[in-house]
Structures are given as structure tokens and as C-alpha cells.
Amino acid sequence: MRIEISDNLNEWSNFILSSPQSNPFLSINWLKPYAEIFNLNFEVTFVRKGYETIAGIILPVKKKFLLHVLTPLPFTYYNGITFKNFQSEKRQKEILEKNESILMLHKHIIKKIDFFVFKLHHTIYDIRQFKWLGYKVKPRYTFVLNLNPIDLVWERMSNSLKRKIKEAQEVGFRVLKSKSADVLAEQQILSYERTGGKFFLGFDKLKNLLNELVNSGILEVYYLIDSRGEILASRGISIWGEKGYDIVAGMRERESDVASHFLVWKILEDLSTRGITEFDFCGADIEKVAFFKMQFGGELKLSFEVSFAKGILKFFQR
Image 1: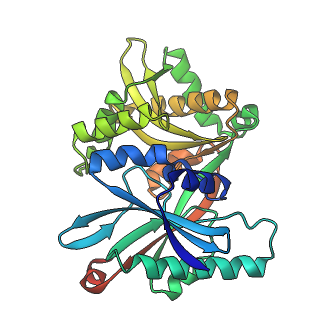
Image 2: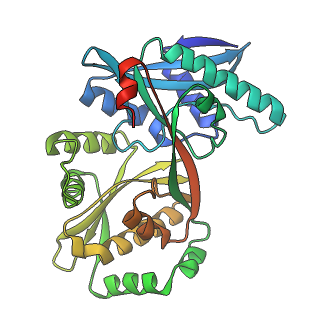
């Protein structure tokens, strides 16, 4: 097994499509807007065995305070190492090649980067090699909902949630799709800062990022409109194959909670009619957020965030 750096983005795109960890956050269409707005360069690294690709990673690196750090890009729920499909191979071989790939990529990355964080896909559940190498490991949770058939999703939802959705419909709420993410950006910042914190991106930069993701075809924007034509809530969804991903959301006012329930339900209906069979809520670690998403009946999935720091940065590692 050996490390190879590649500038062939088509090869990277084909590799992630065949991987069990395949998701929109690894795609070139997702990464290009970030590269342009945040002035990043992306490096693709593969682990090869003969002519076969065993694993790969794409890294956005930016120099910061004389140190090279890598943190997950905003609204990017999964990143890090991606493996080939081991489905038809023996379990022992899979474990050995995955562990060896992690070790080789680790040795390669620490030569260039002083601190990095990977948010691993929920299909990567054996994280022992990361622990052996001294990474800090944190559990993460999400709900994944099967949309096929959508009628069964409705049946499994709680009666209280069904009442909220029916109530929203009765007062004239409706859902529209838009090619503009301007209001989504505004409501995302409002929702975040309602908790007392300062959002990590300014409005203009966030608006530009979300609109570029829309223009690249990797993000779809849904708005919930009340009977007066005002936008109460918004949501940005990414479609990847037959899977949907809940990327970014916002509300105009806190009391519009019932609107968000209705908005999510109408999105699920729309995705189902388009042949989308699975919906990843992309996060369920915050109590209130987890309760909201849980009501739709998805399966709880465990994944891991792993981080590694060199030198003095170890003292700042959470």
C-alpha cells in the first residue's frame, strides 16, 4: 500500500460515488464555492494497493497564525477519510486495510497540518485506529428517515405532530422553492443569534456561499409562506443520488415552531415524489433540535468526530 497525491478531480468524483461514505459534502460541486469564497486549495490523496484505490481524502488547507489548521467547512456534516466498498471481501481484510489506510494517511497529513478535525460518516463505526494514534474522539448523532413509502412516514409520526401540520395547512401556510438563498441566510443568522451567540459568518459572506451552492446545483431552498405572503421559515436541502440531506435552516421568529414542522413535512413529501428514499437530518446532538427531528420517526445513527493536534495546540484541543 502506498500514498499518492492526485490532481484528477474526476477520479475523486468517481471514487466517492462508489464509496459507502458517499455524500454531497465530498463532492466537487460542494467544495468549489468554499474554495472561491474562503480562498482555499484542495488536495486529493489516495491510498493505493496495486492498481486499486483503498481509501481517499480531500483536504482544504489554509494557513492561520503560522500554523496549518484544518477544521470542517461550515454546514459540512461529514468529511474525512472515505473507503472503497469492501462488501464482497473478508472482514479480516477490510479491518486490516482500513487500519493501514488510516495510519498511512495520518502520517502523511501530520507532515503538513498541525491541527485537524474529521467528522466521520456514520458507516465508519470502527474508530480504534484513531484512538491508538492519539486522536480525541467524540460521539455524534443524527436521525436518518426512510421515505419509502411516504404514507408510512405519516402513519408513524405522533398525533401531536400530525395536528401541528394540519393546523399549519388550515391557516394557509404553503411551501415554495426558490433559486435565491438570501432570506435563508438572514433567517439562519437570526435563529443562531437568538440563542445569544454571534454567528461565525457575516450576512454577505453567508448569502454568497449559500447562493453559490444553489447555483452549483448542490443545494435546494424551500420557503414556508404564510397567508400574507411573508416567509416564516426556510430550509436548505442537498440531494445526493437517492438521499436527501438537511443542511441549513432558519426561522423569522421563535414562535413559528409549528411552521418548521409543516415545512419539513412538505419537503419530505416533495422528495419522496422525486424518488428520494432516505433523508439525513444531519445532526441531533442539541436537545431541542434532537427532539424536533425525532418526531418524524427516523432511525438514530451514531457517528464520530475525531481530532488531532500537534505540539502546543494539544493544550487547546477540546
